[in-house]
Length: 323
Image 1 (cartoon, rainbow, N blue to C red):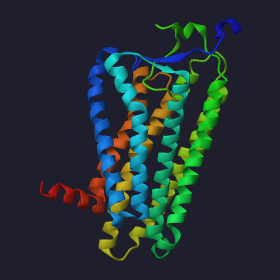
Image 2 (cartoon, one colour):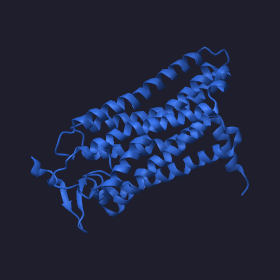
Image 3 (tube, rainbow, N blue to C red):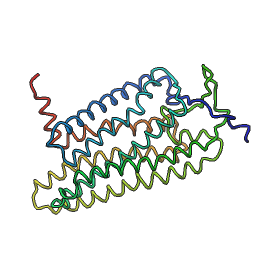
Image 4 (cartoon, rainbow, N blue to C red):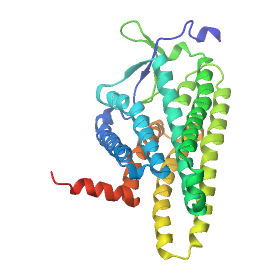
């Protein structure tokens, strides 16, 4: 009924952390802190190498630098706030700040998926149509691709934010915090679309339908196109007469495949269990929601450092320099 809704917009959200694991959050923060520092440092190193080394100013490495920058932003949007909750307890986030965080989390996630698709297209052209590589993947085309991918992320995420604004939140879930703030309690470490929507008293069917449709038509479609690209690449590689050429192609694409599997496996598992895993413990859902935003940024530069010869050789060169 109307009396159960808030009579005026509440002031803030109170993020409580991982429900049921409050006593263990200080210990959970240790691996999360290590992963965050590793992600920022290693991705920063990849970006620096690509920027400073002119021989790496090629489409493949430019996309890799974009991925590294996006990874730093993606984990920085969520992890510092999460660690603050783990160390100091529940933390307040104002309504505009919460919506802003939610926008950047989902927009950066979509952009990461789009960059992985662009990298798959780059490898497809390089291996399946090498004679057209330099004429197709020009600097102008890459710039236009980046603008289009950013526009796609903004266009897809914005309606989800607007759908949150139509919701009414129940008085029963609102507490009066110190300083006169009216806080809506979220049992999470960051502001996430469906996590906020589930607090509403009115129907969230439009939110759920839009979220599912948008995810399938963007991230889901990206995954299908990436899979198709690598299937075509694999078919072409197996036909190469030179064993050395096959080995080089498998080495480069192997790194991409590892990154893609890490990213999409965690993302899809978290996405579907959050919506349909009604019997999955809440603390498992929250931990998964954090891991799928932190594990790929941590693993991406490590995988590329090991699998990509040019990156590996430059890293070894840096380490071998006399102090």
